[in-house]
Length: 155
Image 1 (cartoon, rainbow, N blue to C red):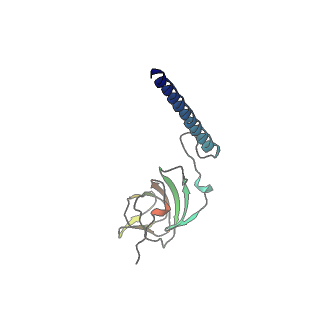
Image 2 (image 1 turned 120 degrees about the horizontal axis):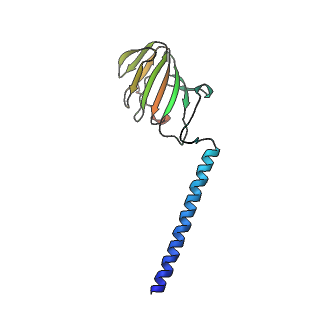
Image 3 (image 1 turned 120 degrees about the vertical axis):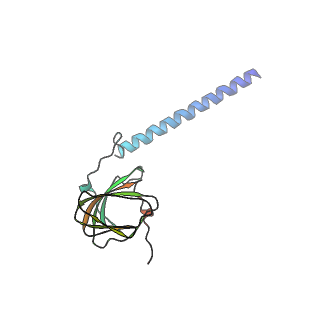
């Protein structure tokens, strides 16, 4: 009985070791793959907003830095706002707007707030918002931007 127990224990220990080695090898391969694809640079990411293609958004046009599947922390957007931005809200995202250029207003839950360069506004989840006027802003989105979290009230 004692011999059977020892043999079983040794087999179990060998199996655990093999699984552990396989898991570490897989994790190392995935890490090397991410580095090879340029998605990880040490413990930081770098982007040049001038090198990112613009995409349409409810406010105008946006260049979205760090908008990639393996980043869930935050994204940074440079947004050129049209005069007819569409009122929208987010259920999960917090946005921090930094006004870089232009003067106008932000409509925040129906209230018009004047903004000018270097004004900073934090827009929390659920706040209906839009910009009024031609503005260029930096929008810091926390957590990372999710296009499924753009909501519009139907008139």
